[in-house]
Length: 402
Image (cartoon, rainbow, N blue to C red; front, side, top):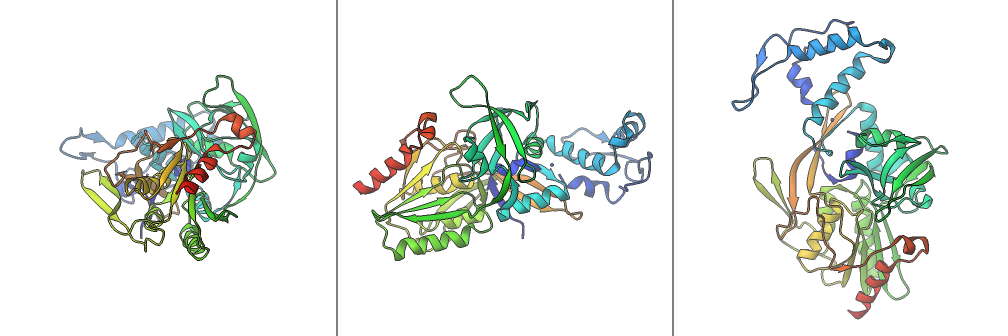
């Protein structure tokens, strides 16, 4: 079954698959400078509305590159082929539609399992600039002082301007016990700052719980990964069994993940009705209805959000807002209103492709604008450095009044 994703961070390593199908098996690697011709003999017309094109141009370019490029040791057929797929996908001009080589697909699957090496931060593209979406709690990036919204202008002294998310992530990631220096500009500031981060082994449990002495249960969800559904079900059971007086769902700096997990999470509050509305390329709409037991329906709930809350996090927060099941506290969310689907390809590579846009149950498009909190509470640089959390404090005040 194909998995659907709703995550900003999965833009990090990805480009397309049906070039292989279009070439119809006429593509063979390792045959020297001459490109295969069996497929590129005729002019193909893609649709009635598009201009005809000549596939021979592809092979002409291939041959010229192999023949003329001065550093022939740098080129091999495999890299040229995968590079052409990346270029094909970039024509969509969508940072979330990307091609992954077999190696990148393996890294992607490791990320979703919650075990990998790196700095522990999710990276995306905003205003054509590499941006930190979410430094993960307790990970090297957060410990070094990296914050959601930091714009990355250089990596190890080399400009990051013009890099794709894929290229930036490759430069930032690396083996544990090695370091990377990011030159960033923080929101509200004009001067750059350099942050050096020692990479580590990143092992993430996506759900953590804390039952406070005042009876408030705090559930922090850092991603919507492979382990999230099971861990969240346990967190809900703990909340009920401990007869918690209220609940804080902390989705700050949560960049998203599996769409079905987001639906199941929201369904713990919503008994029936749509959790989100999805619209595909043909303009057809589909409702995704509540699927859970609504075990938390009636629990006083506050959801914490910020600029690092994206996609699947926004689905949950938006649904709880629209059904009046929770109060949203914090700052506006990231604003990713599209859904991606993974296509596994025969050589171990894969395509992550945007297949739809989505709206909250009330029909609110959040793409590029995000969700506004019910109560705007900023967490400033001064708060961060003094280890104060006014957003969490406000959430406690709201629950104690209820």
